[in-house]
Image (cartoon, rainbow, N blue to C red; front, side):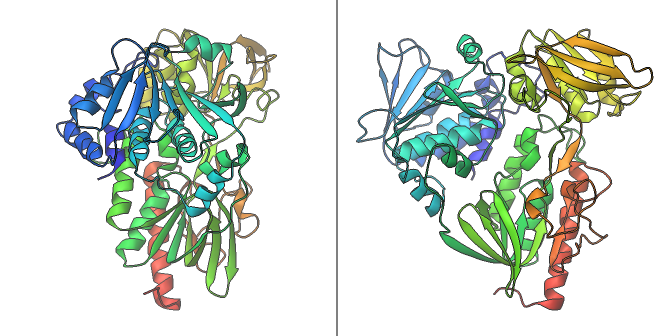
Length: 536
């Protein structure tokens, strides 16, 4: 049983959710729609080793806390007048004071963060490497860390959970996660226009998703040492649909498999809704990711969490460094996917996370009641415009081509939105603003005429660029940086295969990524059977 099941229940219902971003998520409503949800929660409650003290402000506690108590969680809820309503301080036995604080009710994806930190406070040791444990212990400065998040943000739990672990294991660090819905004025005063936003001592340190190792770098932890060596037949780099599929196919062949990734799910975790998978009418990226995690556990795939930094040949095959581990493998499948393509226009880099953003459902709540622009008329761009139209005052969609390339069903839905304006045949020239985005300048492809659009935010959904820069010149790539593969997923280096969005495949879809991962894994198995003896 996996915590991801609980996460899914907190964000998925039988019907597609049309709830505005800034409305508090009806977690309990969705939770109670799942017949086994209470049993799942009772299971996690049963894993608690010791009781956890939870100090809260005056007034009634949130619904999630009542559900935890009903499920038998070992909680001592203690009211303190000096605390604000909806403020919760967690302390494990023997603590002199709380090091993990929740301001605002944990909702949406952050329910998982709450459950995990409760388990860890009770005595369940977090799943981190020995190297990461040593790095956490090396932090000697007193640090007061705050993370602003939104309930719909799929990236935020990675950061919140990592900082909760660091605070729990090092008494010099205190971490407070702040639900932006309940503290909108404070978020605006801090200039929070992208989540997660992490502050230390009131100063912004970084925005966006990152790994625990990168966070430790930001906190001044000592450099990591290689703590262990992982041996396997197939090392799969990348945790998206292509990488997980490759890992599963290789494991089913009886091969030892290590999956190297900073997060299982990859770009799926940035996808709010999925409606084009055969046999699945509707799902979410996070729900699909949770199923992938369960399958990896079923087939005993070793998951090495961290950023893969190098790929080299040696007499034993190939070596990679990932999350404090040295991975030695006889074959490799590269499935590192792609990231959002930047426009490369003036103002984009300077105003990134200051109104320029790439994640509509993460940062969309911060633009409720404001005017926004979406750049890109493909499926992702149109879906972003649809989601933003629920809460934003107005949405302007900019598309380079003369018609929207998105699926017809999405375009038809977009045309029904009265607060959405679509401008075809235009390109973005620049993004302007002093401290935050204030306007965007566009140009007609045909006439060359320009127009200035006043806006509070620019959501860029202009296609993808492959995550292959870490490979250097090790593999042959085309001019777009995509790995060149043949029909069997083979690269120019014998024993190295690739699949998914990181390759020169014609189309970039979940279905094609899955196919590419399967092909690469089968080819790796054939290579091993033909050329090498597999690890026993």
